[in-house]
Image: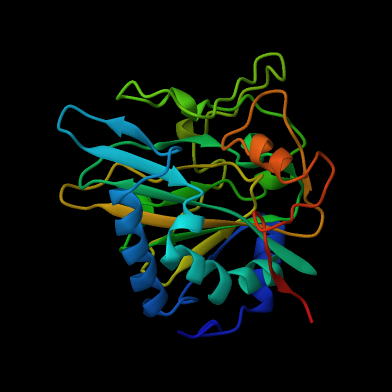
Length: 286
């Protein structure tokens, strides 16, 4: 498979990412990569990691499945991480010198699922801190704008520390989540009520096809991605990438996913640049 993107990223796309914290990138992955990830996702769902959760199960049995950090056990994920254009795309958008891989996460909604992701930012949950972070959100099936993840442009530049949702509470099967967060005592500032007036916040989302992706900064406020039409499912593969200013940070509020134990085992400590085979450098600017 081709390790180069089918087309170059434009200067306008880079400028949009820098200004808005999010950009739609149509047609940046050949369908061979989508087929490979779909094969990996099937294996992932059959044999989930210990971090996997069912975030939602309604009375009709429709579910929302989540898993992360499965890449070391799934050949298809590893091939995508190291051989696809993903790392280069992240590096170009962030204007970084070096790009390290952080972790993968998958989101699988069964047909007709009505679960919608709560509005949140990603970085406050993570065991790292820095502005130069990038997530690539890739649907493996067609997705309509109203069902795709939505974003508040420019919110990645806000200075406010918000009280974030504890996704560890989403356990309809009674399974105790491995990772939890508790922002009480950290901040009393709540996220704005974006659903009350999404237009005033400039909320954006897009119709997407397999091969498209959305790139977004981990500090941007985002949510939604749900309430599917009957018979329509949604399968999404995401990768998280770290740029030049990112350093390890263990947070008093907790972390989800919490990498502190495995980081410590590998000799990494707060203030260090992520590295080792856990967070490999995949791309460097020449």
